[in-house]
Length: 401
Image 1 (cartoon, rainbow, N blue to C red):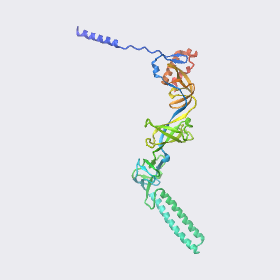
Image 2 (image 1 turned 60 degrees about the horizontal axis):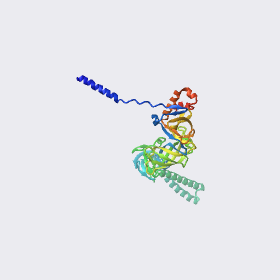
Image 3 (image 1 turned 90 degrees about the horizontal axis):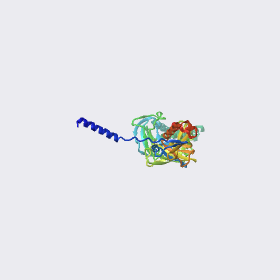
Image 4 (image 1 turned 45 degrees about the vertical axis):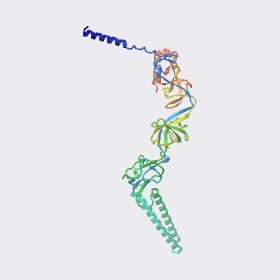
């Protein structure tokens, strides 16, 4: 046998083997059919595995999830601004350091504060002079040299000078001055806590008129063992999140951990921009796992009326009408209009159209709705007119949002 004949034989053998090994095409599964208003799949249809169902449960309480944000507890927070213009001479504390009332945070060289100290010193001198003048006037009056009105004028001058001393001393004492004129303004803590923010540098020039809305304070001192929780509540939760109500806080960066908080204030108006009610809660943070400005989710147990609870993704909207796809028996589905009493991001309350124990499609609902619509279109207007599909308007379901 020639080499050419051998090559042809080998090629023919390989081609024959490839043909034998080629898998046979599987027949397409039979399509689901319409039986009245019901959409029926043949047993073991592969599409059934893609349709997840959920059972409607009797309504008792509903877990409401609301966006929240952690901030410093303003009842335990102090923000420090300069009362006088000056230059930063020394920074005594930094972020993370604990402080007590009277702890010096920074020292400013402040000529303006020196003026206030000088005013106090001058007022003290004037008061001493006024007291001496009063003593002389009293002696002269007792000797009959001056009239009573001169004595009364001296008494008034002494009283005014003493009042000026008290005012000037109170002003300088408020900012830590103990006497004398040294132009050293100390920024001190007024509460127990931790320095959580510092916004000044050595040698920085400071002016009180530069401080205002949007300008950060020089220091922020807070007690991080307690934080505020700012919750944006929907209008429907106005009666649930009242002062004294408890809530559970979940933080994405701390998975698996739950924190208990309590509401202590709620606004009496709705924010026109977000259409939410501002609710403020407080939460303990003894181990300091929670940090200010963390985003979180507040969960509240809400008592609801009669009805059944199903997953939110099991409900679709057609125009202004809500509807679900009910599994009346394995492989058999029918669309049904429902009325909702509450809509949450994960669960909804159905008050009409569904009974406890019934099963609804909760996964790939729109896929099933498109199949149902295609079956309606295939059946033609005669089937719809005959009443075999009283819910034929559900054909718009796939277009619903």
